Length: 104
Length: 104
DNA sequence: AAATTATTAAGCAAAAAAGCCAAAAATATT
DNA sequence: AATATTTTTGGCTTTTTTGCTTAATAATTT
Image 1 (cartoon, rainbow over the protein chains, first blue to last red):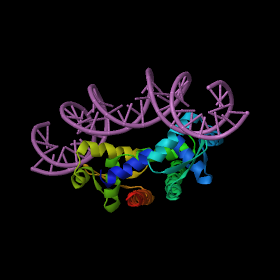
Image 2: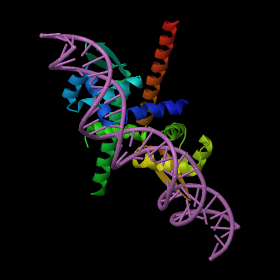
Image 3: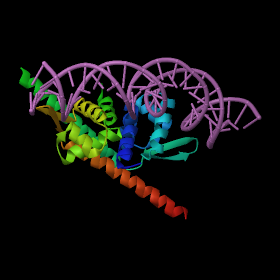
């Protein structure tokens, strides 16, 4: 397991829209599985599954409180990488815009 | 195709060790397919495939020079996101270290 | 135009991941 | 101990992704 494998694996764990949506939501507010499912309007078992994958990946931490389980980001560096991804996407759409402009 | 889909797709394009290895190599030096394959010691058709996927994803730009094709990063923001991923991994390994320490 | 070098594409089997629903497990409450 | 709420898991099919080798395409050189 070298450096490239570890990085690729991290990106793989981030390569799913539901998981991204969850990370954004948890970036705003720590919360429980069923509450989160409501907030983001996705089905609850899938949210639970996604959360446990992200936890296994070390990206989330959870804590049981009674019959509820509260999840939170393990680090704010996760927000950084999402912002970084956003920057790339913004630049790409800007580039496409420039190309279309040239073609006129 | 909403925001979350776009971000997840970007991460998916980054979720492969060979592609990460290639991005690191191109971060140091623009180069051609076969030269790159030599530098990173990976088989050439696979490198070519990985390059074309990354190009289609907008992460690389290429230019034909004679019978060679030279590839480069489309943006240095790509280095940023790799660094960001590295930060997370470093922190994770630090955390694991701390846990092991506690358990003693 | 034949030979050489460089790049890309085709095709296919094996492995991994996604998506979904229903069922089970954990905890709290009555 | 029965019920209700929250969370997790199982089992299943369908899609994607990988990894590989061989073949095709592009361009250059002789």
